[in-house]
Amino acid sequence: MTERRDHFIGGQYVPPTSGEYFVSTNPANQEALYEAARGTAEDVDRAVRSAQQAFDNPLWRDLSQTKRGHLLRRLGDLIGENAEELARMETLDNGKLLREMRGQMATLPEYYRYYAGLADKVEGRVIPTSDRRVLNYTMREPLGVVGAITPWNSPLTLTTSKLAPALCVGNTMVIKPSEYTSATVLRLAELVMEAGFPEGVVNAVTGFGPEAGQALVDHPGLAKISFTGSTATGSRIASTTAGRFIGSTLELGGKSPNIVFDDADVANAAMGVVAGIFAAAGQTCIAGSRVFAQRGVYDELLERVSNRAQSIVVGDPLAEDTELGPLAFGDQRDKVAGYVDLGRSEGARVLTGGEATDGGLGGFFYQPTVLVDVTNDMRVVREEIFGPVAAVMPFDTEDEVVALANDTDYGLAAGVWTTGLARAHRMADRLDAGTIWVNTYRAMSPMSPRQGFKSSGVGVEHGQETLNEYTRLKSVWINTSEDPVADPFVMRS
Ligand code: NDP
Image (cartoon, rainbow, N blue to C red; front, side, top):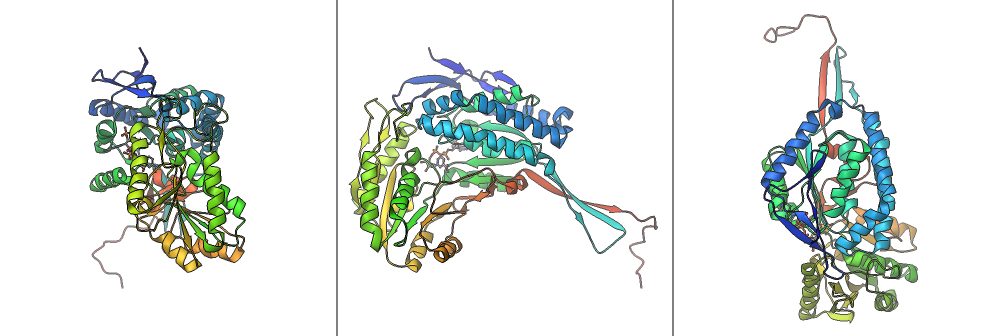
């Protein structure tokens, strides 16, 4: 029998009230990994109440900002000390390369250290109103219990983008991880306790989106929801939170353009295109899934990208030489296969790849795929596939590619490959996306804010700016005068 994992509520493991569990499997070989608790509205309610008690607990509420920073720093250190275990857990759960997950875990402590450093720098302002007898100042306060709903593609990294700033400013949290990746968030909750946070500050309820996730979204005790996932689910969450007048930070899908100009270093650009779409088997919101190549470099770029795509080593994500692992679960692999078939029926030509495989392991793999003869109006070019599928299109002029690149429902990121300094800045200005990379792709840092435009989301993650997402602003007016307060109905001349 596989090992059982319970919810983590109030500083300890708590079995689900329903007594039900579900099996999490390894997508590389379909072997059962563990059973996770199937959360219900009752479990969510228990977790939210625990988080509210922690929010009201003087041990947390009255902790100095500096000491909150110490706790965050300690949590970052613990993640670093346990990085190998966490990386393996995520690779088993979602099939991403162990090498990549090791890299993510090595970076995660930096997020906690960054927000630890900011914890005692969250300040208000003194406002010089026109009345000198009045002192007006602002304060930033924590919101309360924040609900975090996270996806399966980078479970701890995406949880950290929410947790570190939320704790930095004194909130408490209930996390609902994806049903496909429960393991590391539960382990993180243990490390939170080990770091010395009071019990109930961080809680995790596992289970299914429409059940545990929906119950969390609907819970009246939440002060905010922070969500990463599909645009469809994000839109539903936004409707609910708007109706309750609470905030939401939504990091949603993308269909990002990666644009290569004639004046680019084509070898570098080809590597950037390959990294943009085949890293993580394309299962990232920032995947550079629409590749635009200027006519003069189109053939060479295509040749370089398809050659590298064909040589990508597909297989066991735990193996050191593997370059592309499986998709995270069977339905996701079928979704990717369905989109490539749709592309074929729309008139696209598969230059490379285009087939599902079991990777020799009985898993949910899909070949690195390059589609050509595509146009910007085809569904494979408009909709997020979330798999290793690049659609490559030629263009002639800068104006033309700006129009094509911006002709999308999404606005998460964009890549530009050029040696022209003026063109780089022009493109950064003209592209309608929250992150622009020039001669690089997928660069990210806890220090650098990012925001999705259009259907890619609402609100900012990372950087100092995200702290505003987890605080509310209070304006305080103090009358410093000893003068009697004037009768409001006696008109002053
Ligand atoms: P979802 O948006 O459905 O899932 C993301 C998270 O939301 C998961 O924790 C999920 O739980 C939860 N969830 C699902 N339904 C609800 C609900 N009604 N109320 C509250 N929470 C809910 O994405 P999928 O995992 O289904 O992936 C579908 C597509 O979304 C992908 O193919 C990709 O295109 C996109 N996506 C984008 C991501 C990004 O980083 N921007 C990340 C993941 C997906 P559970 O997993 O248990 O269903």
